[in-house]
Image 1 (cartoon, one colour):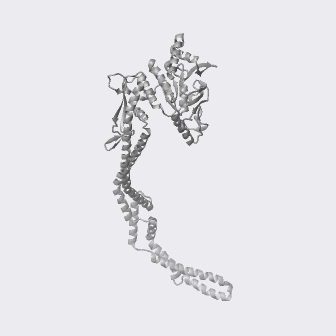
Image 2 (spheres, one colour):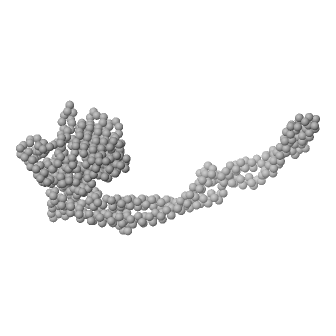
Image 3 (cartoon, rainbow, N blue to C red):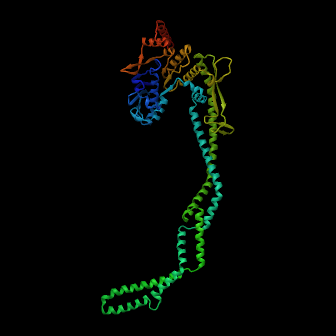
Length: 569
């Protein structure tokens, strides 16, 4: 429950601290006094996005802080511990608003995110605004109400998870089939390209070798001439370098006999002579390798042209790029072949998932059918006490229409929320056929129906704070008195905060707060006062008769309060 609310520098609120109690807390006051600001403050603390202009004029920062007693809500305690936030019996949520920086939010002193605040807020506080009954005008909300009443949300969540899985499988199957279709169209071309490249027998570096060999073949005659000339000078001619150096080697032997110190020089000459002989032998071998065959030149030119043609065809700058392309095509062909296996696997899985989805959808549908009769019975009973005694309430169930988001399994159309669509029908008058509630119910009727639904849905649920912000709009008199009684009854199970302009409802308050505004040092400021005893009577009298409170209105106020207290007992 909400124990305390602290607000600073928000709109016309300067400093405000409100201590709330268990049961039914009512807030009353003139229009514009600041009641809606208090409601907005609670929305802010629970993660609503806000603009800088909510901060009080001439102030740089605003603050909203709320203390909740969570001792009766183990789910919240567990969630906080999982988020690393220490929590025992109390939770303090504080949000600091700034004109210059992003707002900051804290839980028990630890920095948190707006998403965390919104998530925890769902467990702590439900706010039903003065236009909350408009929820009933949207037919898509009716199914949510029925599922909540039938406690079918866990089953529906299981169904929706299975539904999302099969839609994911179907989407993947569609993608794979598209890839397979495109691959099949390209398969013939890819197969031809692989065969063509393989038939060419390309080798890495082949183009560079051809370029070098073409150059040598084109200059073969010149190479032959020069090589033979070198050989003649070195070895073959009668007065060759080798022959003359051989004579020098013999003369060195004679010199050594005369002067042994020349033996080292003789070794150098002998080594040089040996190297020259080896060089001459290599030249002869090279001459034997020179290819003067003109047919070989033509073959090389043809091979070179073939490679250039393949490079142009495959838009490659080298043989290696052509070979890389072939590997890529090989892989693509293999992937096309593998697609069939993957598609077959997914098709099998889809058949299994379809069976699961259909089973869960049928189980969910059965649960809804069981809930319909009980919801009708309880809604009509509640409406009877709210001044709509002869109202007929019906729940129309229709099969889901085929659409883009639906599935067809074994002849059954299944949508994202099951196999049926739900719409509430109502007949406020005897003898009239039930018609769509969203079209014929008045604002006051919708308010009472919404209160009846909330009473049914929240009774016996997890302890929460329920805030009703003028949901009594459009009703009055006896019906308003019954609404007040219902709120008091609901307050046995939950803490209720109720903002109201109706004295019939305010008289049922177990704790009464009056919201007023005044001027302090030239500025408008909101005040909240907890009323007791005679002051409560005066406020109820004001709500009955305006500023001119008379003995009659005061007596009427006392009577209303006494009646409300008597009903409580």
